[in-house]
Picture 1 (tube, rainbow, N blue to C red):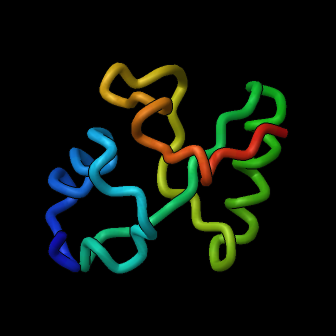
Picture 2 (picture 1 turned 60 degrees about the horizontal axis):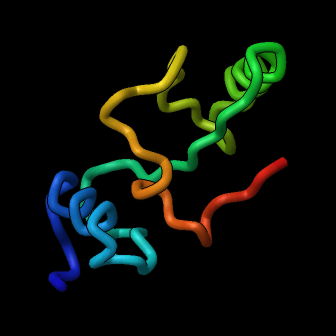
Length: 84
């Protein structure tokens, strides 16, 4: 696999199971981030925490429900999932 890909190509490679390695630096110019899914009450506190600490905890986006284009089962590798 090429060392750099477009965001869509990397996403498809992960979703199909072809790519399962570290994604750091694979798409130059794009942000790499973590996904956190929380109940509304906890999410409100986490959002405020990130707003007060933008350096170490940048908030990239906030959703208010399930994005039909996102499939956590295939889009996030098992090694990166933590249930709290």
